[in-house]
Every structure is written in structure tokens, then in C-alpha cells.
Length: 181
Image (cartoon, rainbow, N blue to C red; front, side):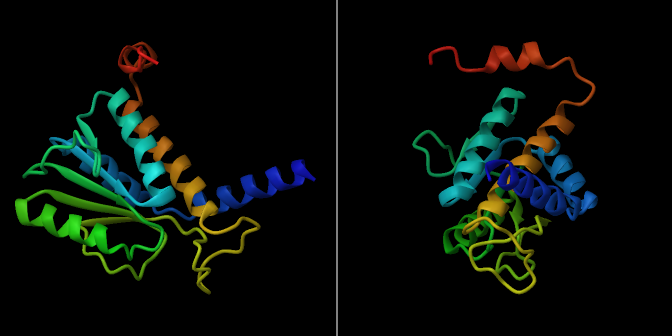
């Protein structure tokens, strides 16, 4: 039974990731590379995915913060805020994006929804199922937004690999890895 479930989950995620637009991933790569600093925001499980991505960006040498942490500085011109929200309807994300635009920072959302209420400069659509189970979402055996969470995690790890491409990176990343665990 477990083998069948694992195979189904892997197959579902492969189908979702195959539906991601390459132009959108390229735009996220470009925005990250051009940003002075990067700020990540998400709520709930999307927030956990954002924290994992922020940690990987830090390992890669980027100046990165998670919104809501006590050491997060103010956002400014030249910075990038990346919001992760399956539904794209989070009022707090809209608030953070508004503040970012006000100070001249860039905005980018990673979402499953083409009908989100945000006005980011760019969007990366992950065509996965969410907890809303809208008719346009793919079928899944997984509960709530698990398919979006997993696909976002895998896709953002692929973004990290693309940022590191052509570099002998393991030693550098290891130097930035926590040593007071």
C-alpha cells in the first residue's frame, strides 16, 4: 500500500511540475539575481516552504530574510519580496506587497491560483491542487494543499540548483551551513 501511495504522489508532483511555465521560473531566477536583498513570506505550510527556500538562498550567499522574524529589517528599493500562497488570497501578503511597492521593492508571488487578488510584478503559477479544490485544479489523493506544498518545495529547490549551475558549490554552501546545531 505504501509503495503505491509514494508512486502516486511522485507521479502527481511530476505532472504538476511539468505544467510550470519556464518563462516564469526564468523570471524568478532573474529577480533573485538582481535583488539587493530577498524577503520571503508565507502563512502556514507555505510559510514553512518559504523558510526552507530562504535557508537555501542563505547557503548560496544571498542576503535573505523571512518576514515575521524578529531580526527582519525594513524592506527598501532594490529588494525583492517573494510571497508563497497557494490561494493567493492572503490579506497579509497583499499588505506586504503594498508596502514593498510603496518603497520601490519588487514583488513576486508563487501560487497555484491564476485568480489571486495580488498585483505582483511577476507570478510563478504551480498548477497544483489546493485546499479549495477548485474545478480547474488537478485531482490528487493528498489532503488539503499537500500537492501544492510538495511541488513548491521541489520547484524552489530546482531554482536553487539553477542559481548554483556551473559552480563548484558544495564547499561554499557547507561553510554557510549552521555549525552551532
